[in-house]
Length: 110
Image (cartoon, rainbow, N blue to C red; front, top):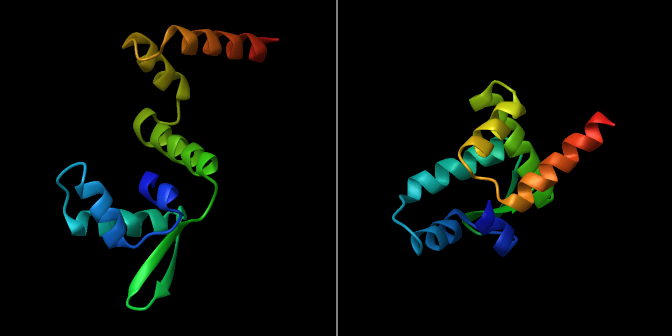
């Protein structure tokens, strides 16, 4: 998704080339992932010449929120508190992020 957001529209080959510049990846893996993202409603596909062109279906923040919810549902059985506890315990939150979380909790409790 990051590549498509950056390019605004892309073919499987475009995404493959961008990812391959960073790491080894199979073309078929990129094609499969883009098909899954389309099935989930994150990408729109249109035909151009012989290739399919993919564009984001929704704004970046909306898609990221949906992906996080999907991840929390699959990995943490929908319990976002479990994710937050995991991040806090593994020291994945910066002091600034911890402060923001505290403020959010205080706002919710009020």
